[in-house]
Length: 322
Ligand code: HEM
Image 1 (tube, rainbow, N blue to C red):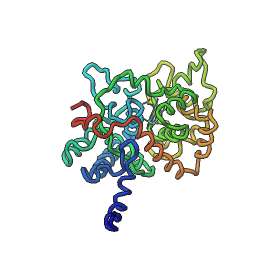
Image 2: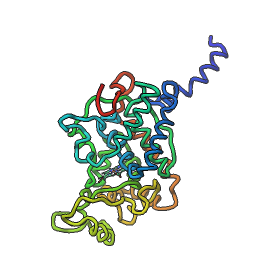
Image 3: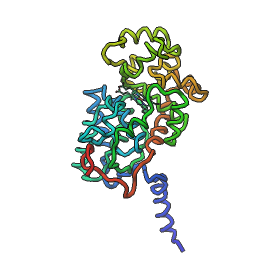
Image 4: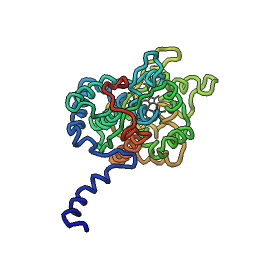
């Protein structure tokens, strides 16, 4: 028979056991093996964004680009001697901030060598970017291990292009186990950062191959964008949430609701009843609910295809397998 003392001990343990989800991830995963992991990571992100605020966009985007391709396994960080890795694929050529991940990794290797995976570093950094740019924090689930494969073609086939319509976007997210709500919430990440003309020039000059403009885009916005992104001009960039692109807020939904979403994939959120309702409910004055939803959806995205237990490895250097 279990003694009362033993039962008490069990009751203390239960929350710890329950915090491990079905994928083997857990909040506070490194609390014993590397207690400072989260604070060290946060400090690096804080210091980085203080001097280079434009890295917030690419560092948040990196989590998405990692998780959608072979799961959240840091495959996006691997280098290939023949330029055939995920990072060499066109959608990843505008990713930046790899050196910040390395900086976190170096700091963690000094404190607890061989313990914290690069996949978890990307995860923690994405949360810290949101916090440092004005969003709410959330508990990150950790315990991912790093993959050993990274293929250019996987990035091309798994990352949704900015020309996707709503059906393609829903299919893409569903294929990763994410819901329509996750799609509209995570698209809110476009409240920070920039987009290059090449990602939306077709909307300004040649939408259906007849030299036409995307009729779903606000005509004043089209005119403004045309001045920056000329037909045959250089591939410069614009802020996705003009005037507040370094601040994590719900400005993105205000933009989309006014037909000023930059990409077709942003505008597409008005073409589905559920996503449209979310956009309209968050176009102003409902920021707290977006902030809370964002943490939930980031946790959901962080569960995609994770390697745990004995799978994969803990890389020593994030850009190469051990
Ligand atoms: C729904 C499908 C999505 C599509 C089609 C899409 C597409 C794009 C494109 C084309 C860019 C511009 C890149 C450039 O020109 O430099 C971009 C930027 C960005 N995306 Fe997405 N994205 C999607 C979802 C997401 C998600 C889920 C996140 C993160 C949760 C995210 C975070 C970002 C961020 C932060 C930037 C700014 C990058 C920077 O400042 O360099 N995106 N996205």
